[in-house]
Length: 103
Image (tube, rainbow, N blue to C red; front, top):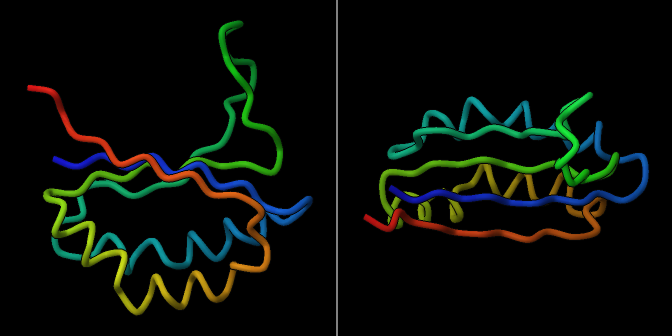
């Protein structure tokens, strides 16, 4: 299984707009072959003291894919290209971590 953690930082006051577009795209992504999980998350309120806040302009995308080939197909999909075009000007930084289990 492939795990993806994407840390997305938007330009100031654009997170809600980007998340609205993201949520509209979720059904298309979940319908993709090999998609196990795909969801955006933000800082939890009143979390434990050890929490390292992301901030009001950042969200994290948690993804799980059956194989790297499935992830590659996702990255090339038409709906992801449309999403990127729609939100691209509102993104200031993106860090993508692609991981796999150790056992």
